[in-house]
Image (cartoon, rainbow, N blue to C red; front, side):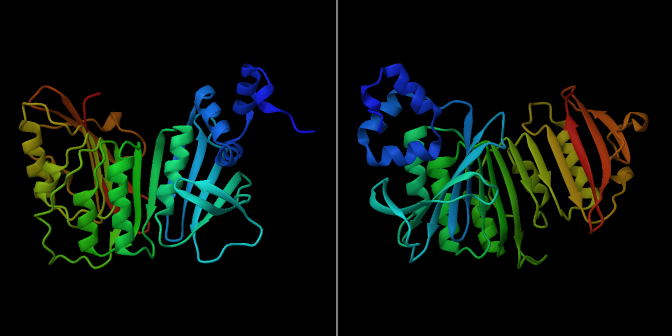
Length: 339
């Protein structure tokens, strides 16, 4: 026998709604505007966050507990011309009849898959419906560019800038040509963490990269393919922590940057710089003229050596030099200002 939910005391209704899963609530409120209104008035989602993955054929949204990331539910939006026969239809955002089905995720978590025609921005529509109902903070967004058309991933960047730029982490991965690589660097806007795991497939030393202009002022920036980075780029990245891989700067160029950085008396936003290159460096050249103190006895086990020097503003900069255990011989420095 069905329970007349709305005849129950208000506190009982609240407890029932709070005990239900996100997918159950989403489906229930899509067919009942009254349930949706009551849910939004009674229930405030706490201690959960949203993770978003964008790919060629599908986007998925994971609702995860902050203190227990092993507990989560997932919503998929999949672009395809045909959908399975055994589906039900939901109203999502502005679309009245979205084919949907309950489907177990690969790891056994609860999942809802929605099927959309290719002529709509299905990821944005599903996101709008989810965020309007649950009002969750977005923790991480991952964009996988593998086999994705340029028009599509540029649309992702524009959507991110307009709607999702408050996300704590934006991770972009895959491959593209150098022109698209530069376009994304110049157009993405985030003030939190940017992880740029993109390989520029056609880059060569003859490419002109000195006129690349950064528009983001992220707290943390990591760029995996840094072959194009010049001296001026190091000075223009307005981030507190910067990690750069595959850079081609010489030891003398790194030393020149350090001298300028050390001599700054006014506050400089960068407090940590990590640089890696596919060669062995000469620390004597890199630290020449820095009046660095050898701190080998204080170094962590995973580094080759450690030094420190004093900045013009009185802060201490600690330097470590290490080798990464990867297939290609990779060496690098970490420069960290302050305690």
